[in-house]
Amino acid sequence: AFLADPASNKIELTIGAYRESDGKPYVLPSVQKARQWLGSRPSEWLHEYLPIEGLSEFLHGSENLLFGNLTAMVHKVSCQALSGTGAVRLVFEFLVRHYQASKTIYIPAITWANHWNIARDAGLSAIPYRYLVPG
Image 1: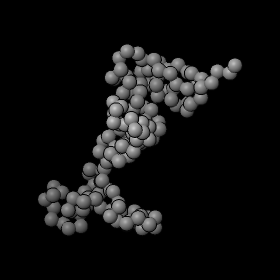
Image 2: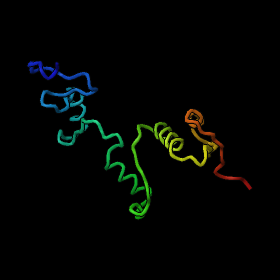
Image 3: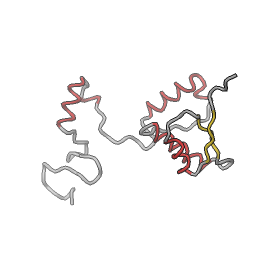
Image 4: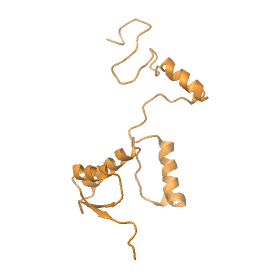
């Protein structure tokens, strides 16, 4: 129905993104103003969904930060998460689905309180460990 509608001022609202009739993202005027205020140029704006694994430049930069010169030699898989809590949940879910040797993990004794619940909800048994043993 949307494509068949001849109206020139229509906006697609059903896919979670505003689109112009040419299929490009419609950028709200308030967003345009904020971008201009921040000093960015329209050619730098990205208003498309990222791929499900995340922004490849971010992923490669993170791998280089973590592994340095070893990046090419390390077997790895990377994905981008929305938040630290989201990343923790993804890792725990990955372990439950793909690492069958154990359902026990070790979490630092000093951590965010929700990490224990995330582990439990993912089906893992969590054991605390200390960074430093006095003595």
